[in-house]
Image (cartoon, rainbow, N blue to C red; front, side, top):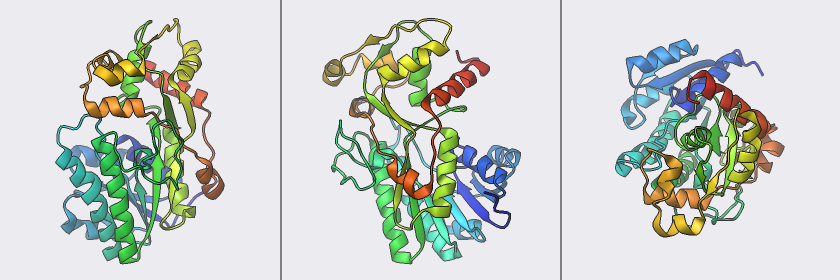
Length: 325
């Protein structure tokens, strides 16, 4: 849909999710502005067709002027680290930053805010399927999951208090061109060897292009105060291997690490994540798994999802183009 008269303000516009969203907004005809913290970030936004504005989500004083004039604020900025070096900084960005942006939007008279949360904020029990109405279990597999849940709750309470429309999107694991860290790093490691060490858990994945479309549909059709899970497919790691293997020029014969072994000592996980730091948060997150119901986004937002085979194919093509495999 072309919206020649609509303007969007994006935080996190130089990150994976935000940069793809920014480009999608520009293609759809939105006038897009993005918050940046550096000259390099400003150049990135310019190259994507947007207009940069300097600021920081943890510095609220300048945010009302930054978002002024926007029809929709997409708050995407956040810290996503499996083993965070500074949990206080993560909380400041993911919790306080979300509140700061909502307050700034209300002060500037912005009509709507779309908050990028995460499926990790749903809080379903391990081995269960989460949806938008799932009651949070009260436990967190990681500091990241905690910060995203508390940030979402704080933002919703702030929006209700100030009377501003806030719609929440909860993307699953975002995969596709441009992603080579986090869970994508585990995929890369598996693709680089014939006998990768893997743990067979469920994962929920969304194509990066679908993530962008889901954000825009939430802005256009989402109900204020509601959350929408964005997840294209849920499958086991063994099912993912079955899909990916024919796309490669060699066989993959995984060596499976039992969950009980990982849970008891955690050390074998280093064989899965390679050079990445291994910490209790990472072990718990991996063993928790991810399974989510995307029905609400399909019915209420009109979302359609890219087949997982196409997502994996585009991801592998990008890995090859970048010389990563």
